[in-house]
Length: 162
Image (cartoon, rainbow, N blue to C red; front, side, top):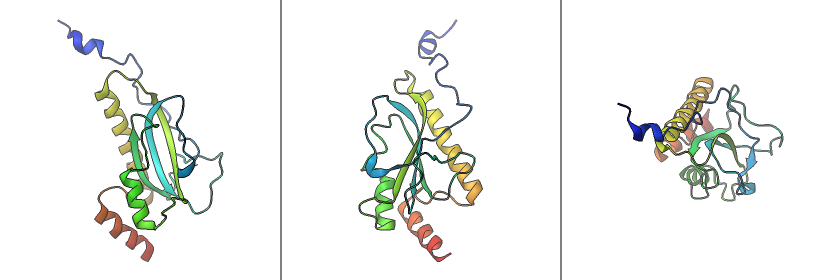
């Protein structure tokens, strides 16, 4: 006998792992605006000294060293937000109170409104971890703001000394 509750909660093909993930171009933290079309997905925060080319987006194949944090969001209009823990730690580590060198890039995965939260969360968590793994494999270190404050401060000091 089929479990009816499970069958009614299926996303009907909506939640497949995307074949190709694409980040949108970097956006200065201060220039973020709410969007009319709501998306869930993953995002990266990066510290960039001079404004990047507005048409250029971070590549999954060549994740740039400037990436400091990889996160996931069930709705990009809600997260990443100003009270984000990664942003707070970024301010502490770099002293960039106005966040002038902080940029964000998002990768849209699925429109907001999936009826199966567990599937959505598992997919986003998987993609977030995949990007962290690819970054770590390429640069032989985790994104700086991943993990706890003590680790971030210690790693920042090590990177400055190197």
